[in-house]
Amino acid sequence: MKQGDLLVEFDGKPIENLYDFTYALRSKKPGDVVSIVVKRNSQSVKVDVTLEARR
Image (tube, rainbow, N blue to C red; front, side):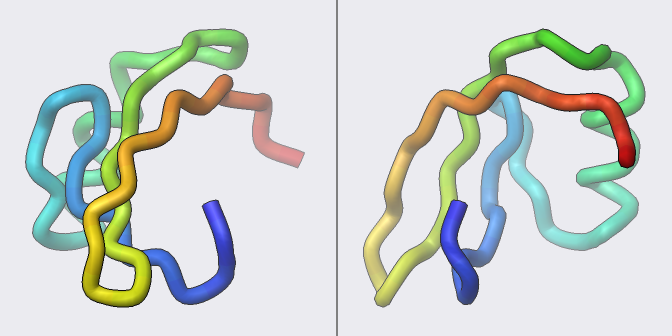
């Protein structure tokens, strides 16, 4: 992800607000790889990311 990206999908689930993201993230653990979709400069970009532990 880059600064300014807007998260719109996490692991196949639409993200419309912080609660959607929190709920989707709860079932994952550090080291899991998930697909996300972000809006970047009016375009949808799909990226696979590896989750890390909270610092």
